[in-house]
Length: 115
Length: 112
Image 1 (tube, rainbow over the protein chains, first blue to last red):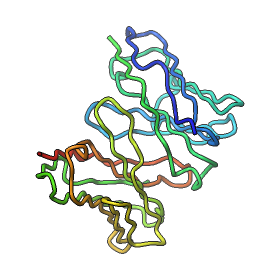
Image 2: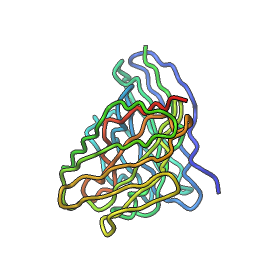
Image 3: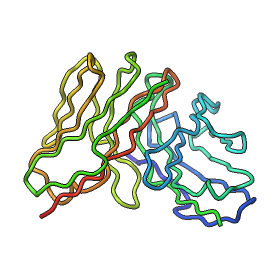
Image 4: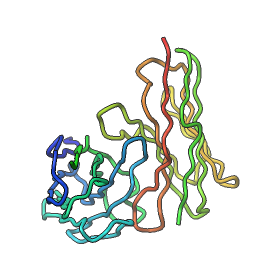
């Protein structure tokens, strides 16, 4: 069974630039959730994708957007990067939607630094 | 919406001792409570979870207890080992969207 993978591992961007982060879900899982984890904090929910559609969104501005592909992999895009976007971005995969998707398995994360 | 509070923020124990981390939640409709272990430079790892139809669940040295009336749940680690040193997060579901609300974490240090 293949676990959740994310790429790249680390990324350094300049304020105002755009970034794309990628995630491959665990084998057998069709739902992907994205979280932002600031240093010393717990993960915060950005949004979730199920069957290629956004299935819930946290308190993040529209410059955070995403996609899910037919193979259930996903991308997180952030436009107009700000210094406060520096964080660990985590992808979690699960099965189903709604209450079925609470059992979530995380990838190793992408460390984004905005300078 | 759901709010999760976690205590303590740091915990230091001697190898072989037990460690207990507690979380409270606000939404009485919440029915799933996972615990994650996050080592330095890694993503959170699901180590144990409990659903609201049971009061306790064990897996070797770790256990989770749930008190629905008081709306709190706890992680118990017995016979701690240095490799248990990590940051532990509790979480609870937020409504029906399927996302989790996390506590702020507990940094556990196990001294040999």
